[in-house]
Length: 273
Image (cartoon, rainbow, N blue to C red; front, side, top):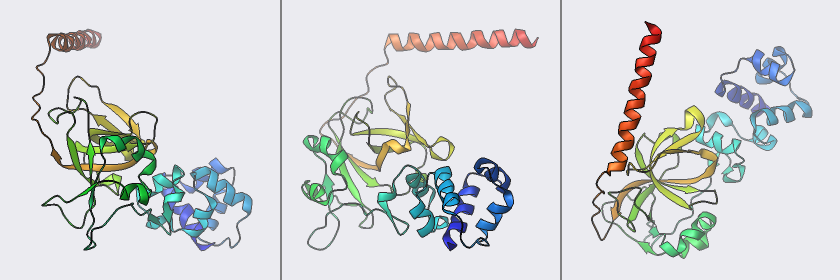
């Protein structure tokens, strides 16, 4: 039970709760929480352990066997979203990959026809082994890369049907704002998207996905909907995309929004007068 006390204290502090507030949420006493956290309660009841598990959305097995104080925030987020299958002994699952004859990691290409299968096959070594493999000069041998196709005009000047060479991101919290990324998604929509992201994980557990083409609106993606993140390294294209001219309709909409904002400012000024 030694790890239970460490883990309860770690999870409580992560939520910025006092022992008193946590006791209130559980319908118990602050002294009981303090005794469990300091391991002065040698054999907590099964009921207490179940309550801790439900409160923090962490399985009982994990609470008793894994030192959560050594996990990163993204690993804790994955545990909260029932990612326990990906974690063994406190480590993230091993990324399925392939190597060449000299034991160097290949760069697998996900062709257009394999896009639909990547969402379910990304962790299957046989599926990954079936993908075409390439080498790209100038890339680090100590990082993992993969190539994905993109379609559409939402990310112009990156053209339709070009390929994005991308680097695997293990710790999502390290993502800097406005990083270009391939996001592998769990939902029934696109299998993956190429977007410029703003990292909102610590604030509300989402990424803000932005298009470079101003005609597309940004939207938030919950982290539990994301399977993998690959950040942009380079791209391969047969054409050079020239962004379309800004339309008269778009300019009219912008002007209308400016007029509305000015009107609000005038109203607010009169109210303060």
